[in-house]
Each structure stands twice: as structure tokens, then as C-alpha cells.
Length: 107
Image (cartoon, rainbow, N blue to C red; front, side, top):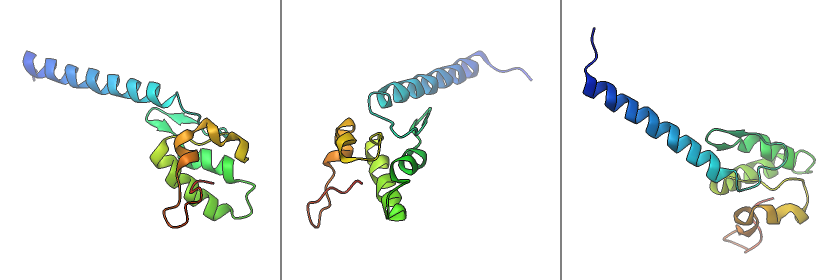
């Protein structure tokens, strides 16, 4: 079965485009803090792992993880550490507010 030259070139172009996009997404995501030992994947931050590290000692662990994962999904970053002093590592995460009471949404 022979593959036509135009089909082969189109497939090669698609592969190169996807590879370029993956590199661009990874490079863009590297400017924000992954934090908490949460590893990065080719598509960005591993939110569950990063949030588990951030919320592991929280007395409301389940709620902390839920909110953290929501914020991480929107911001693609989670501050390292567990305290308020590290929130500035991820401005999107730090500035997200609860619409009902105006308090910080992200733990």
C-alpha cells in the first residue's frame, strides 16, 4: 500500500503543528509556579498532585482540594507551600474571589 506524497506531507505537517503547540503550552505554563511538588505534564500542571501537596495538612482537606483544583484548572498554577505568604507566586490564584462574599476563593 503506497501512501501518496500529498497525504504524507499533510500528516507530517499535522504532527509538527501538534508538537509545536505542546512545546508552546509547556513553555507558557512554566512561567507560573507549579508548587507543592506538583509535577508538570506536557499539557501543564498536574492539579490534583499540586493541590494535594498544598491541602495535605488542611483541617478541611476535602473542601481545600475541591476549591484548589477549581482554581488550578482556571489558573494553571498552584502556589508552593501551604501558607498565605506564597499566594503571590500565582497572581491568578491569589486574586480569584468568591462572588458571594468577596473573600478569596482559592485556599
